[in-house]
Length: 217
Image (tube, rainbow, N blue to C red; front, side, top):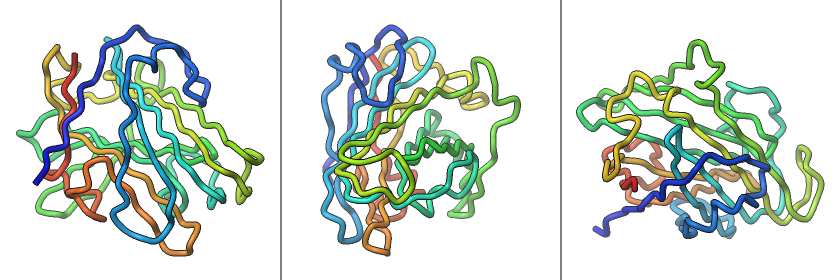
């Protein structure tokens, strides 16, 4: 089985605009996500960077329709079009962080204890200040609104290390290895089509022992 590994360059913190226009993104290569389930033919690719304060993600999604209506945070946005990131810094614990963002810039961030396939997410407490994520989205080929006809959308977001407390092995020292995966779900065909950076999980996004590995500069 092919190993999924990705080097994560270290950069200075920068501003997000939802389109990935910051010069820092030139230091990261695009990585494609592989379709693991469903029929939608869209291409999906991602970049990852890290600063001393947290991890940056840029995910570019080809699309034809924004199949999403939810605009509030901390809701079941995974029932509509969404991008997801999973971070498992400490393999001694069956505990990892999950972040989701929709084309409408609604987010869900949870800590997930997963014991023998039994899991349930917990929302962050005191989610403010340095613990707060930064995120923005943009749309190509159409209006930035629910159910719009488009040619694609982009999500850009920052997950601060302060939010990942109490996970160990964070912040990552140079050379640190985190298990991780990136996903996308799209509902244009009615049923879910799913993509993964490390496709060994198949359509089971919570198969965390099959995650790939981030290696931090």
